[in-house]
Amino acid sequence: MIAGVEEGLLPVLTRLEPQDPASTNPANEVARVLTGRDYLSWSAISTFRTCPLKYWFRYVAGLPEESVSSALVFGTGIHAAIEDFYRAELAGEAKPDVEQLLFAYRSAWLPHDPDAIQFGSSETRASLDALAAKMLTAFLSSPAASVQGRVLGVEEEIRGTLVEGVPDLYGRIDLVTEDEDRLMLTDFKTSRAKWSPEQAEDASEQLLLYSKLAGELAPGKKLVTRFLVLTKTKEPVIEEHLGEVRPDRLARTVTSVERVWKAIASENFYPAPSVVGCASCGYRQACSEWRG
Image 1 (cartoon, one colour):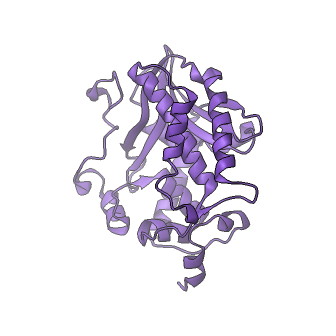
Image 2 (tube, helix red, strand yellow):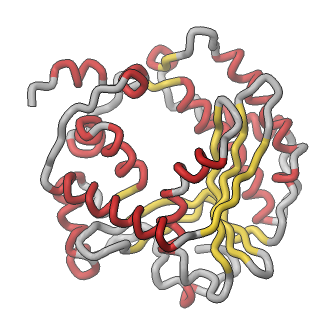
């Protein structure tokens, strides 16, 4: 539960507690039968959009990935470190120093077999650790380390129905803050370079959907989406991109999710070859052996 908010104000926000899918949303049962999970996640939606067969391998067949990219593990580690920073803020504790944040970053590498991690041509674990230290040091020195307003939640779970006939959307909002006028939903990102406004706009769909579910969280306050982007450049930059929740953009995104779900429910799974996507895919062998 988000700190400081009465449960009665959050009819659309729930923990993933046992429930009767048929009594809440009939489409949840369809999702459960297909994937074992009675909901959709943004990660699942994005995976299907990228490659329907990859979705099948991961969410239907439940195959473990043959490999994982270093960029994914690195991003997860930076994400975990930033979370720890804001959790301390939420708890009213002293701000962590860079060594404490690096401990959280390093912990993200532990579940992975080192031999299964794919590094870039000029990358090593040592070089990425050094980069992480620079990025987290830059973060601690940036305005983002001084919270404007109040932290309400970190990695806050959210779940609710977007549209009839589609399973509930379940997700986690990286950071929820509020000030006198606004409720802000923040997503943490790492990037090879600074983002353009167009990149932020293109990436906003996930936060737009979460804003629809969080609409009753703070009645009367303006909903704002925010990306906190940490660049993996020689001199890391911490930038933020704010966006408004536009009804037309939200409606378009909900329609897209509805179409994706219809394709999933009809079990329309097929490979979608891509020079960029296939190079880092953890199912290359399984894909090459797939015959339909």
